[in-house]
Image 1 (tube, rainbow over the protein chains, first blue to last red):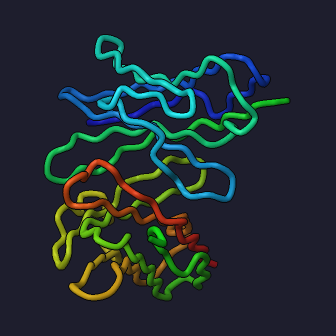
Image 2: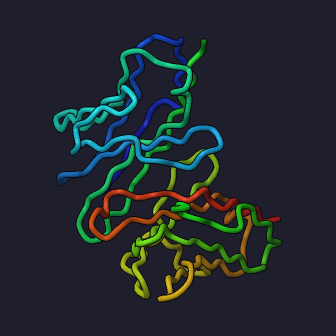
Length: 110
Length: 114
């Protein structure tokens, strides 16, 4: 069965420190991986997807098929990065439903 | 474009009552997904609909839950005879035809069963 694991419920860092939000998945095929973010009082929104290989708001994520991981990284955290981050997997195909991890709350301290 | 709309934002029901959650997708989107988030858990897929069709309902509980997306009007998630365990946040997402991976989420409906 497909599964997404985010081992950290809370990650607290100081402004300017590097950030790595961990995400591991289990899926036997070729998944599509995403990071969604929810800022305080806002709706869930797509941050980035592995296929696009782009950097959004300074965040990057590389799909490592050998380790089945899709960690989200940013070299220098900003206070406005404080939010709930969800890793998600899709098998694509006909339904494209998303399978979410439990989320990690990133708190960036001043 | 106002984005995905959900109403009500908060819904309180007594055990045994019915709950109706509505979702209006973004303009031009014909794909709707419903997810449920229980306390301390991630979002769990429930059902995927296109206009007038249920495509995948593998995440829907077998009883009391139903969903529809009529030709006209919003998508409706209906929960009959609610129980305390149905208390959760219910999120709707929509996607355009050509870019199905890109799901746009609504603000959610928080259902509380007393």
